[in-house]
Length: 487
Image (cartoon, rainbow, N blue to C red; front, top):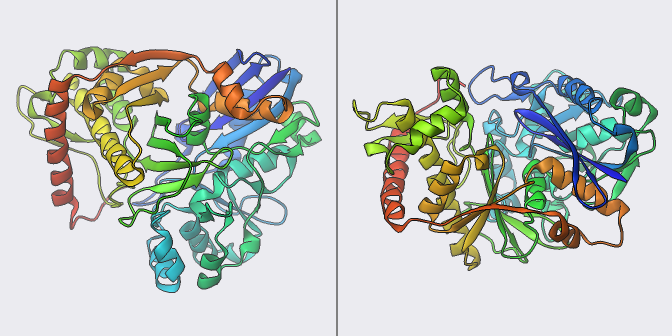
C-alpha cells in the first residue's frame, strides 16, 4: 500500500509517498514562487488554477502514482479563494500574508464585541480569513456571484473529489471556536455574515470524498482513491516531526517562521499576542506565524549570485553578534506578537568591517532566532509550560548554522528530524484513514526518525539576548509612524 501527501507551500509544491512501514518511497517538488504576485503594498495573491496545473504535472512524475491508496493535502494557512456554483475561482487567492483588508478588520471589531474578546484566542488582523472574505464580498466585481469561500487546502481537496469541506485546523484563522471545533456563530451573527458562504467542518483524518474521473485523468491518481481531510502546511510539518504529545514544540522555518507548542487546554492571552488552533485528538496548538524565515536569505543569494551553501560558509567565519550589524528579517510586515503590516527589512550598524555577505547572511539568521525566542518566551509565560527543547523542520532547518544560532538565542536544545517535510505529515494522515489499527500518535512514533542535536552556548546566548532588545527597540522606533510605499 502507498499513501500520498501533497504540500502546497508559498514557494514550492512538494509531494511524498510512504509505504505501510512509513518508509518514503518517493519525494518530488516543483518551484511555484513566480506565481505569487504583490501588485501593490499589502497585496499578495496567486492564480490557484496555475498552481493546480503545476500540481497535476508534478503528480504525473511520482513513481507508483497508480498504486496510491489514499491522499491528503496540506496548504498555506488563511489563504482564501472565492468560488462560484460551478466551483470555479472568482478571484486570485488572497495569500496568507495579504494585508489589504485593513478596513474590514476595523468593521469586525466595531460590530462584534465577541470578536474583540476572541482576540485572546486569535488576534485579529487583515491576514486572517474573515477580513479577506468581507473584502472579496464588498470590493470585487464578482462579489455577488460568490457561492463559497474556500481555504487553499479546501480548494485542492475539492479539485480532487468535488467535495466542499474544511477541518477545524485548516479553518482556525477564519474564527473557528476551539471549544466547539466549528465556526464561531456569535461572531458571524454580530457582523451580519452568512455562514452558508463557508464550507462544512469535518474532523481531521476523515475520508471526505474519492478522486473523481476528471481528477484522475489530470493527476494520475487512481479514480476512487480516498481523499482524507487534512491540516495546514505548518501543522502537517508538526506531524512529520513527531510533535504530537502535550509539551512538544516544533518550529517550521520556510518563507514564514512558524512555532507551535502542543497543549491540552486553551489559556486566553489578555495581551492578544499569540493564537490557538485545534489539532489532533482534542489537543491544541499554541503559537503563531511570523514573516521571518528564508526570504531574506534567498534574496541575498540572488543579489550576490552565490549559492546558499557558500553564504553559510562565509557566515560561519563571522562571530556571534555580527560585529554590531543588526538585521530585520521580517520584510513583509510583522504578524505576531506585534502586528504591523508596514514593517520592512533593514540593516543597522553598518561599518566597513561588517558590510560583507557573510555578516549580512548571519545577521538574518540571528534575527530569525531572536523572533522565535520572543514567541517561546510568551508561550511559556502564558501556558506555564517549560520548554527545554524544540524540533526544527522546513528548509531553514537544513542550515546547521541556523540551528546552532537558534540553540544559542533560545538557550534550549534544538533537534532536527530526517523526514520533517509537511508532505510526509499529510501522507501520514492519509495512512491513518486506511490503517485503523494505529492511532496517529502511534504511527508518528513508529515513523519519525530523529536527526541532529544542537546544544546552546551560554556566552553566545548573552550576546544574542542583548541584540534582541536592540532589534525590538529599533523596529518599534523606525516603524511607529511609517507607511510602506512598496509591496
